Length: 569
Image (cartoon, one colour):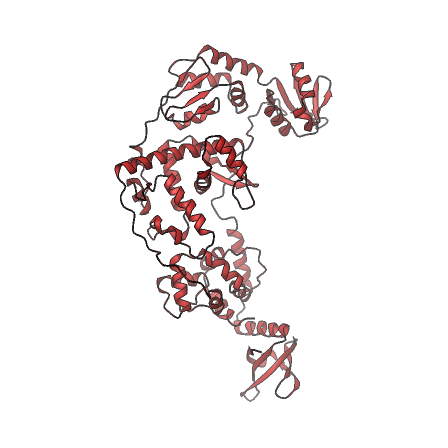
């Protein structure tokens, strides 16, 4: 065992539970580590691999302070933070293993940057327009993800294929990563089961006003910023300094580019690097006020024109709540300050699957239309309502198989020979079809094949089904309680005689390594004796080894050993 770990073990034993929790979570310690006591913890934390792992998390100021400390200088105001990370002793000197880990590392110059200047009226207008567009495009991305969650690669990014599909929807692939970063920070999307899915919070956000949407995104963006770019007042340092905020993190250049792009997309930074009025207060850590931004945004409308060609025209940006519901009934064809939507048989069928009814659709459209409801649209709604539910999917209580029924036998015959449904292995049974595949899977397969399917429960009721229900997002770290259990376990092995426990561990380690020890032995008359002992075994409270000076085997009571240190070969 390294003697360098002893001071840290003593510090850990004396630290509060809060300090230990901060250290363990900051160092990325897993709750299920096999540590038994603070000696194990100290050795693991000072392992070169563990030290190299924590260095990328350090801010520029902390990295600079650490370099100064290794060089024998005062680390300055960052001493407390570095001590809390178990990198420096309380006196500001580095633990010995850190010196070799830091060999060859330096901190680049130019870490300071002036605060951005105030944006001109024209630059502010462009920033406001970009923020408005970003909020609208992010809503589009979330609506797409709600219907078909994005598959994630092993590293957590979405694939090039997914980006290509977003591009086909009119979303630039260049901003996808920044948009998803904004959504995840705001807890509007979360990675679950190797897919990026929308959350319950996204449903509320989608129906909020543009000002409310922007405020939530900006506040979440600021709160989620890494430590290196956060300022002492709760805001952020000048964006020009962000690229060097974590100088020892090899992934930081790309991460900082994504963050700066997110700031630009949210209208927090103008194209020329200046700062709009509404961004200055957020940067200083003050409350987010969108008033100055809203003054530059186009007014939202709450009415549309319904036309005989089954299209709808919004004469301006439609209120988000109305837009989201309308897009559940119609397909949006163009997105601009005057958006257009088209009603189709498929979009209407989708609305009925989502829980709309003939009455609810007509009431909604009649309430927002400036031109009434044209006859072709009325006919399309009625026709879709008549077809919806023609195919009923249920579970046969006797056999447990999924049963497909319909009053239209032509539909049953069509499904029986439909090649797209072959994976379901449908079998004819009287005037129905059955399969071993679960009813939920069958229902969505029929829906995808554009059959007017309805899922029927055991009581005959027709439940509304969400294909990809929003996962719950925890606000607390999942392992917080587990780290508490780890701390409790470490304290349970904290004995009253730390010196004796430490000596036992040093002797056991020396025996395993067949090391040579300089042993100080207490004699019965109160004197001490120094022995150079090649450790060969320990047990029963006794240390065995060969005395190199006398060339004889000795057995010493561990209780008589006052000190022991490994002699370098």
